[in-house]
Image (cartoon, one colour):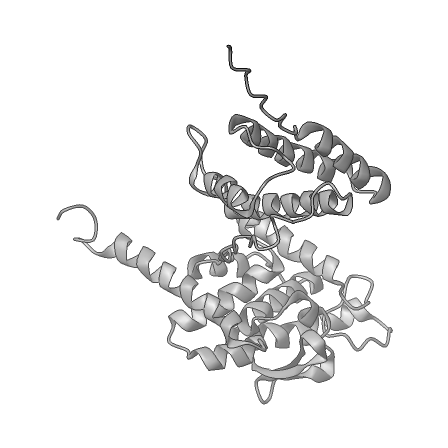
Length: 316
C-alpha cells in the first residue's frame, strides 16, 4: 500500500504583506515617495532573503532576523557589506513593518522587539590645514568696507571657534578688544568668554574704524557684523561670505562656516592646549563632544609623521 505524500504547509509570501504595508504608509501616514521607495527596496530585499531560505514571512523569529542583519553587515555571497548608516535604516524599516503586522493581528510576537540598530560611528568633521586657513584668510583683499568686514569675520571665527549663530549674534558690546576677549552666546543662551587673538583683533580694529560705519550709515544698529544695507548679518549671509571666499581659495568642497570651528579646536589641541580649556572655549556642555577633536588631532599627526619620516613608509 502506497504511503500518501505529506503535504508541506504553504509558506506565506512577503510581497502581499509589503504592498499592504506600503499602502498604509502612503495613505494613512502620508509618507513621501522617496521614503516609500526606500521601504519597498529594503523589504523586497528582505523578502528575497526569506524566499531563498523558504521561511514563512509570518513565522519569523528573532534568530532569523539576526541572521538576515548579520548577512547584511558582513556581506552575503557576492554582495558586499552594507554601510552602518544603511543597516540602521533597514533595521528601522523592518521594525516598522513587523509592528504593522502585529497591529494587523497577523503576528502576535514582534521579532524585532530586541533587535538593536548598529551604532553609527561618528563622522569626523572636515578640518583645514594651517596653510589652507592662511589661504582662506588672505582672500578678502583691499580696504573696501565689505572686504574689511569679511576679513574680520573670517579671522574672528577661526580665532574663537564660533558657531555661525554666535558670530551673527554678536553685538558691539560683546567685544572688548582692550581686554582681548568677547562674550559669545551659545546653545541654550549660555554665555562664555573667549579670548581674541592678535590677528583677529587687528582685523576687527580695521573693520570698526573704516568698514562698519560706511555700511551702517545713519542706522542705529547694535550688531557687530552688518550687511551692505547696514542691518545685522544673517546666518545665510554669513554662509554666502564663507562660501564665496572658499571658492576663490579653491576650498569650496571642504568648507562651511562650521569648518572654521572644527579647525580652531583641532589646531589648539595639536598645539598642546588642554582638553578642558578647549571645551570651555567651544562651549560644549559635555567633554565627550570635545574629545572628538583629539581623534582629528591624532589623525593629522599620523599624516605628518608618515609624510615626513624617512623610514615610515615601506621596509626602509
